[in-house]
Length: 120
Image (tube, rainbow, N blue to C red; front, side, top):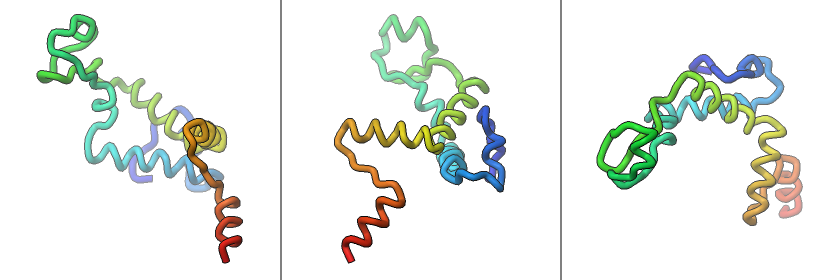
């Protein structure tokens, strides 16, 4: 990994880890962060300039976007921990089940190989 991982279970991302998907998810997050502070963007809220609810909990940073606040170190640790979890077997199963709810079919590698073999 190019950058030092900061998630709560970053120790699972060592070079001898047994789940390369976790590494891939964290590396992709780091890659996305190079282009723009994605977390800061995710914490922006679209609103009308005079929305009292948003003004009450945030600061002005433009005519139609207001941040909920500057991302803290804790925010960054939580995001990276969740993203790493999504790459785990349990996290990927969560994504798989969520996608099934909206009609997607997700094939695990063994299922993909079976589909490809059947087509030959």
